[in-house]
Image 1 (cartoon, rainbow, N blue to C red):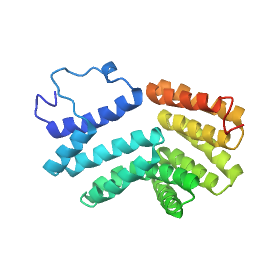
Image 2 (cartoon, rainbow, N blue to C red):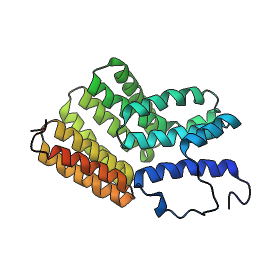
Image 3 (tube, one colour):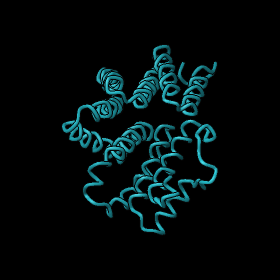
Length: 245
């Protein structure tokens, strides 16, 4: 219908979202798309946005890619996109920034804190700490939308700072808040990151339980490819010779 009525700009935004969805479910054929519509990749959509100076579409493409890379734990890809996002964002109006910035803050914050833990680089810590501060401000405006995101960012920061009791409490708070507020995809993410935390700290049995819960939540959400990725991680942890035991 969008193509029929020449709402091409809106159609391209929907295509970008569709690309992200198919990356998570792993099967674009399961989604009913009119064969007359020529689907485009996010790379093609970004080129269209640049050519037409469509800042909003650039933003949509970048945020949707950050979403997918963050869920698949490709954190350097997220931070690379974050730099591109900042360049694009300077051309956006204040209203658009206010509505959509929290996606950027959340994805970059999770990625930066994980990278800070893995690399010990202070640059990533500073980005992660800034994301926590920003999310605190957002949570003051809407507990419903941002409480679980803040708790998960705080959990990763506590883990980075070796504050293990606070980390566990924050992971658990993120899970409960996401569940209560119906953000089931973020509940799955919280279970997964909590499970990884437990496995990395040699609490393997409990960690495997959290990872299995994340798989169940991802499958309920429809993100079967992502669920399979968690299964692959569990298989790695269960190898007879591994670094977790």
